[in-house]
Length: 528
Image (cartoon, rainbow, N blue to C red; front, side, top):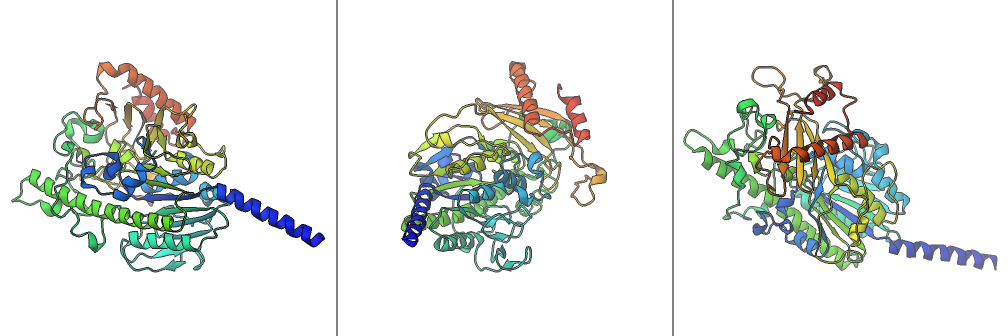
């Protein structure tokens, strides 16, 4: 009798556990590297007419698309650290590409495991330390390779020597790995999968089957690539344009080393070619290669979505699609990311979950990448931990209003004049306006710069860029063509934005108390 009673108790506990697991959705967080919102058809930008992302467009039409999702630092490692930790850079400790996220701050998988989820991380990780808090991982070393990528895999030895090889294009391989994981995951409890593509990061290497994609197509070009007399400031061009050939790698031959790594511009310029034609040819090649990588991601997503439908997982799985940041893609004659301008700062963000989200929804809610972890935790049935600085927007997904939501989002880029020669800056963006402060200095001093990169100009001294402000009226100037910081009509608005900027820097632990040389610059030029 006692044995029967024990058996019934165990059976009841198992059934209760199964029922709870069934109520919890599976969650697949899909992130591509540098996939800009303007390169997704559903966002309706100039590239939408090329139909580069039919599978993502369909996902958006059946779910919810966020128009105002932004990163707080448009560079791979810091953005990913904020997503995993739910914290801003000075709190999670990752300011730039050289810093590693402490394994104790891999908060998202830790919290998901507490809620009973199987957890996995597949694809690009880029946070240096081992993703120890996932039940399973198979991640690219650093950037990884586009073709025949090597992975570091849990259970294959000690990190970082736990290597396994693969064959094929990374987008195909990573999708295969995700599907294989889903085929073998324990179905008695919900799963949480982070599925990260390398594409379309630069050095765009696409699968050979896309060679003819867009071959005979004219790619729309941003007007600001050729003409923008009122854009920018001394902080982005130098006093009297003195640094125009040094700041910001370009599509045109403006920059002294245009696109040095991928050589798109220099291959089209010579003594016998007119600069505007060369810029056009470079842009066409650059965008076609980029969009071929995007197409490879979208096709693979179609394959993943079909698998989920076939296996009966579609309706009870939350699918989130995003990029770790945007990309300039030629706007303002700039490439890469890093900038606080819309093309780089904006992240695509699409959520599909038939059990909760009505079809065809869009929202203008102002979110950033610190909000992603809290939202996924609450989707899983948990509560946002107090140590996270981001907020859950679960109510929005349910079609309800958020209370006490932010009216401005904070941004900061730290790596002054490194890699693509972007000056350090910070600022805030509201629904209608953007204020940017270029403070012209790296957070590390010269004596600290032993193992870091440092860009020097031809005069042999460290490049110091002018300290300036920029202000854009996004309501009337969504492409940020006209810097109106000195326009008297916006004086009161700018003063209010400065108050908000100061408030957020203090509230979010984003001040420069650890970097007094920067704080001195801030104090000196705050009222300029």
